[in-house]
Length: 283
Image 1 (tube, rainbow, N blue to C red):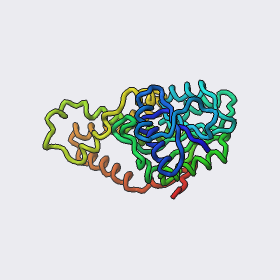
Image 2 (tube, rainbow, N blue to C red; image 1 turned 180 degrees about the vertical axis):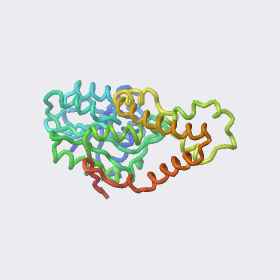
Image 3 (cartoon, rainbow, N blue to C red; image 1 turned 135 degrees about the horizontal axis):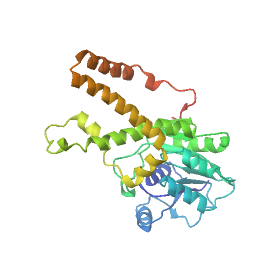
Image 4 (cartoon, helix red, strand yellow; image 1 turned 45 degrees about the vertical axis):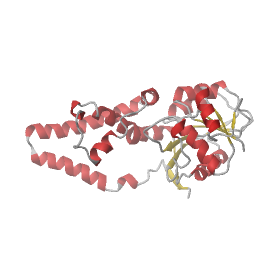
């Protein structure tokens, strides 16, 4: 099956390299020529796609609205697999199924990345040991999903996590988007100036993802605004409880709140599967 990757940033470039490492031939396409030229020069892709009807699988590695425009604006082969890698899934799935399509759609979201962007930071091992999320519904083609699992395994992913688009967007608001928002807000404190010599692991953990590409993440936040806003509200409520205990000097209450956080984290519930989410070991 011929494979094409549309969108040659760090994730798209890494998809190309991971597939090529596994022995696949991969063509590429990009909106601007600079990344395409870099990809060709550095053997990240085998060729440039002029159209998409001849490919059996097309990865769409573009921001959400651009991904929808790409899918709506191009022709694909009958029965081809078209798979976006966007960080939100409900909006994409709704757009894809808003009309009849001649291709089979599989939404995916690789849970891997770096704090930097651009194809020059792509690498073949970015996905090694990571999770690949696939979204599914009653219109998902079982054979197409199985083929995507095989590609994920060959790219180095360790697990396939499968759920509805709604479940994905609710979870990702907490596990990814909220963490980026908190990190971004944390570094806006004026105390960050002159911190040399005062930083350790906790500071590094809190600030590592502060430098998000606002052009990419703004659209992700807005398309998942209801879920993300709810998680921000829950976090603010928890912080207010701690601040109230501090302001009142209530040591017993503060200890209770800290104990509650510790026991929740240590309970092991993070590792307990939910009934609407499947986890499949690929390797």
